Length: 174
Picture: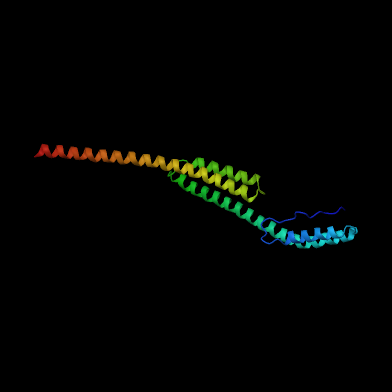
């Protein structure tokens, strides 16, 4: 086995610099002890590993936890959307439900193919789905708004017609 050079060992998202300090101490030792045997190199490597491994494992565990939480959040969002759309479609209350179902299915398919996706990838997919859903909802609300305006206008016209007819009938019978 060759000698491992621990020059830039660092764990991401670790607040203290224990690994960096241990690596610098090891490098300093190597500078001062140019002619040591392989056993001493291995002993120094083990010392460094004793410091680095627990910190790196903790960082990996935290990273995995965040990745899993992001994935579970996206799955829950998809499930909620799917349940809501089934209710709305059954009640014929929402146009665009088919588009949302397709977007949810595509996202779930993506998750199935990317089980080990990093947290930022999952979060980006979540934001992408939210963007699609928001656009569909805005279009549906815009369409509902137009329909409401048209319905209101028809009702107002009907009221005016009724008032006009009522006035004409009063004039005939007076």
